[in-house]
Length: 496
Image (tube, rainbow, N blue to C red; front, side, top):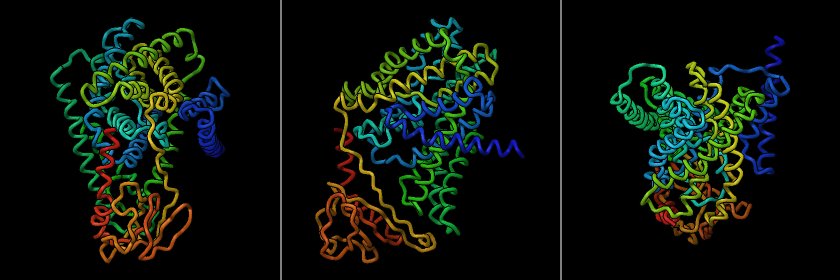
């Protein structure tokens, strides 16, 4: 019993320390993931010696579950109207870009480590993708231009499957004597194609289920949505397809539909994703031993590979993957600098260790050092780089007001929160002049932090936050009225 109590106390302490470090990360300009890793290293065997942890299988399991939740939350928050304008370059970066990065890093690894080519390409595959957890965390709240932010988020949300595929492929090539190039290519298209299809399927099923099932408690809706994320990954993985891609696609579909208890689902998953991010990076910090990491051999090789990755491999991948796609040189330079490495490479670095490959521990330590270097150098300077290159846009609006009715799930109605923007079709109009169906009613207006009771002659202004009561059957009509001119404006912003 004492061990259980000790474990609970330790878990609570680590979570509190992890949450508090996010405040310091903002003030210090250091990505939170670096501080989370530092917490793990401090509490680990080579630090205070509070926790002795070297279970790679458990670390991998926690890492994969955390990635599912983080990708799901990122997909929920991603606006399809913004992403679809950059879908082609994002997918190009997520596939061709990963292959180019992998190849360049592999050549460097071959020269530095003097290992067989398959092992060199395995190392390149491990660090080949940008990290969704790192990118979502660093970009959240930044006023980087919408097009660039959408490109990075879509790339990081969809390039993990490519890195996982390449990593597993090269492990198989190293551990088996026979390989078939045709079967490997067929496996790639199967994993991506089936992952996409199952993601769309589960996204539609989840949306239908959330909106049609009246649950007894509003707190069950976020749990219900999260269960679909785990179900999507597991079923897709059983079909030997890309579960991570399926989760992101399903979340993208769910997040862009009108949902019962939308705010509750979003806020719950945001908080849970933060918790899993803290847990994942702390566990990965526990897994590494600083006495092995901060040696002259690891530091020298890690710094050299990090420089090659940041200065050579990533820029070449960006420039070659986005040829004739409308990006300026300054935008390509920023996309190159914002290619953060994070949890995914560290989690992938456990695969060779579990497979028992030679030099896997050295690879893990070097990958860990490369991730730390990338996070410290690139992660802490993204906003500075955007300002220097003149790529910042208007400050993103962050509505602070939400309205949830406990009994609304049992009624055939929804409360919609809407912010009046510059190009809105209802701006500067009196409420009485808006062509709303008779069943739709504006219940409240928040203007400059003050509550205004709506009347027929109330003129709607830019920045007003409206709370609109509508039957579920009229939601599509309402959305069409409210967003009549917004899609055109988003396209202009994305192409600017």
